[in-house]
Length: 222
Image (cartoon, rainbow, N blue to C red):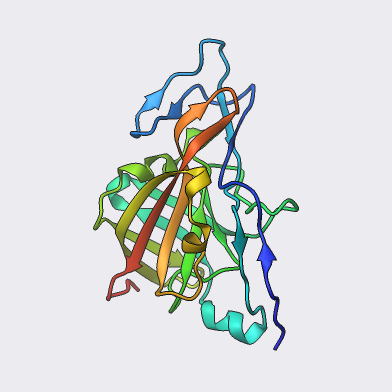
């Protein structure tokens, strides 16, 4: 069995860049929409969520990874927020950042971690809060989700797994616990991540991350 002692992923969780052709609005900390700065700059494509600190991958053997995986997710539905979006699998950028689909309309599942529908660990899905083409994306609504809300993830063979929201956090990016977000050893959870809070026009980044934790419900939708 091959063992990888640790994979170090060192940079901050989700910054947000500024682009000339970007949408003219951005989400505020309370989910509202705020106008661009007086200078006329606009919010551009959101930087991919990446990791602050060390995330250990203790075993990458095919046998161990197979235990964490079921067929990959392809669709995410949160009826209470009007979210119905495609999901694709993503890995890591060269700088250690988690890859994120270019369009805010698509969520990226971190394929080096557990899969939605698995028996243990956190299945992590992340998406841009906005992009230059569609403006605000579906994940811009995550902060408004209620505890107890239902989330359904459909996989590549048509099976669906239902989750129930247990916790919603809006946290300064410097204080997000990456060990908690990317935990592989604990009970099965679905974790949704995006940018949030105030957009800092000086740095070109949102100040916070919005993280939603959901646990499987007993029945699965087939």
